[in-house]
Length: 96
Image (cartoon, rainbow, N blue to C red; front, side, top):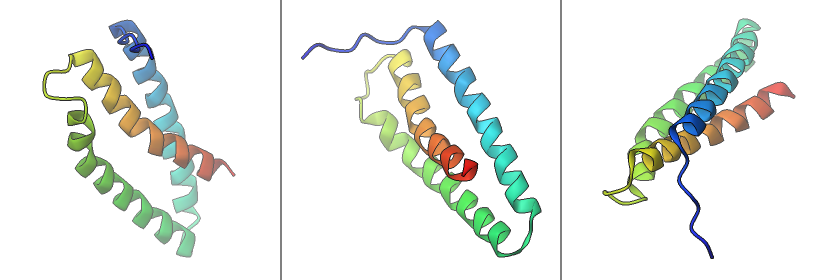
């Protein structure tokens, strides 16, 4: 099994930009859902807050899973992957 080559800063910049665009879409979709009011809006608000708390609390363990002496590029890549999973899941869920 070969070791994956680390991503370069330009690759990480593009990934960051793409994640930011996807986050903007999730924000927009959530805003539409919350503007509808009622139980759907309440449930979405609760879900949003709990997801944000979970993501914040699990970031450091996810970053440290690669060891204390990993490169900045590897740490950045791990952070993007950590936040990318729930963002993609929310975009798919809210787009239905």
